Length: 395
Ligand SMILES: C[S@@+](CC[C@H](N)C(=O)[O-])C[C@H]1O[C@@H](n2cnc3c(N)ncnc32)[C@H](O)[C@@H]1O
Image (cartoon, rainbow, N blue to C red):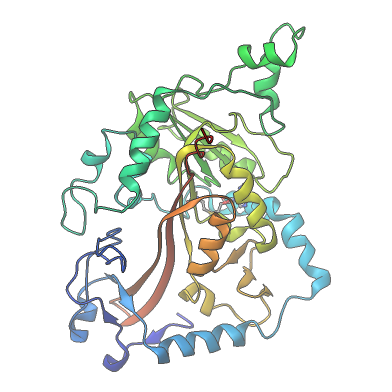
């Protein structure tokens, strides 16, 4: 339990009063629940395994900064760094060879935090018992607008107006007789999930811990899930799972850093892109390109959902010296890499790709090991960004 700090009552994080949901400074609306277990009395800390909405004191922030500075002071030599990027998929593939599907847990919070994953009409049932105590999803400025827009998009399925290098070979080769002009190809091309009324794409699906909850929720709804990972073993694990259902899901091997890589759906065809702990494993210099490329596949009104590691999360602070690749970017012992985001970085990343912020939060929690009487400060980012509708042409 190296790196974990024993709790002193004075250092117990102060919390957000008695408000069950985080308050948005602009509208006074609770933008997301992110858990509702609030520690108001430091003496109660060992009564639960997790406390939500934990605020850090200036002193705690400073200590975390120093710890990160310290473990970054000795970096992996530049000449050794290339392999972590070039061989990233091999490292992850070995990870899945070792751990199979036993490492990550199913993402049970998925529909509570991201009701947008469900086609219209299903969100309310999935979010009925929200931890914040509200029956309906916590109101979020902008979300209802998205829902309305996405609904409109669904009525007007994408018409694949042009052939794009981003469209997969599969789609283009589906033009059977090969004699056509580009125009004919447009009309005859097909792709998995073509007739779906709602399309979700999970990037870096790993062993499928988000895939199965989604697949079982979208059956018979007209929705379709695509998921990819650059580890062939991970993709195989997803396909081999008894809950895998190819009538609602298409899984494929793809490195999203590949600038000329192709996808089995056309641009402007997705309602939702889901990024759960995947961007953190990509080299920070590549991440903007990845997000910008992915955004091209969202429909106007479509939404990108992001959850990942936040700056000074426990897992950052417990890195030993010598594992740092560049600022806030580290390589683990097994060769997989991890970056720790700030709110501003997340905002820039998605805004630069032309998306509009709906939600961008730091989820700060106190994780408690009651047996060992230690507390761990966790920081995760949770964000939602929407693709705007195109501007109407001037009259
Ligand atoms: C931390 S795991 C998260 C897995 C899954 N999203 C989950 O939450 O359980 C990160 C995943 O991203 C995948 N990944 C990392 N970089 C990728 C890339 N460039 N293209 C596709 N997948 C990638 C890894 O293989 C790994 O399965």
